[in-house]
Image (tube, rainbow, N blue to C red; front, side):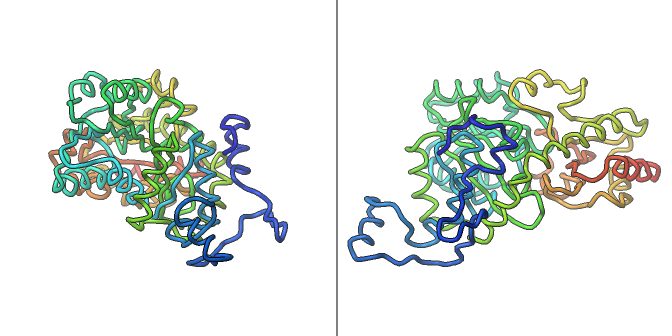
Length: 395
């Protein structure tokens, strides 16, 4: 892998793991749309299966297009190597499957993406894995939740959709002191704004459906390991679970990642203006965005992130009904789940992305029924503000 930090992030997104195709001179990685690869002889086949020689065998176990994508994100995250998966949840499930066994315990951010909690609390619990979903933004709670059998601390920071930030470096120290792993879902920040491995995390993962691809046309995930040992364990698990990424998906994401730095920069600029507009509006009760002086964790955000990002949450003074009126009246912004796309998306987590958590779990995690989540895209900011203004008039 290239040395992380040799180039700035904007340069890396264009050139990381991208090489001229030797046979043709093509400057774009080709789509190797095939399921299996031929061996020169029987011995080569045996050596590849045993791991004695490099090379491709079967696309579930590795593919040239997918390898280029995996190495690209590993370079952006400053990790040893990456694994591409068929969805963000496949990435999360692969990490859990690899490292968690019966009788072990996980500490998880409580305001995490809803299905992540469902996997832990409804599925892995069936196999004897215990979990504690807490406010990982409070280090005292993290320390209090540690048990002798804690195997993993799982952070999502900034958290979805509360924007709560966890101190990655401090949590890594706590995890390692207790012989546990620190895993970070870095989807909200992207590698452009935050690199958890540099702060001590062992594994970082993304739903690449969001910022990394950025064009609402691919579902996928990626995992990056800090060490060869962790990578080898997860590679074996992923090969057997089968949740791998298709070569055409990989090619689309490689294309999307080239504009990642540009999209994050523009989305972040728009988000700052939108957050300021909402914070000053008389019908808005509160706004949570790291770029606002009112954000309670602004100092921590500035310490471990290179920007405030494109995501925010807010609530209207009329609560849930006011939020519904707003969502039903936006015209330019798209009422849809997901985030990190080139278009601005707005949604209601309590009835959409986090409905599966249940009302009690949402309340405990700070996800109120009136919370609205907004992912700023790259449209002209004047058009976005005008759309919000006219929608708020209907509230």
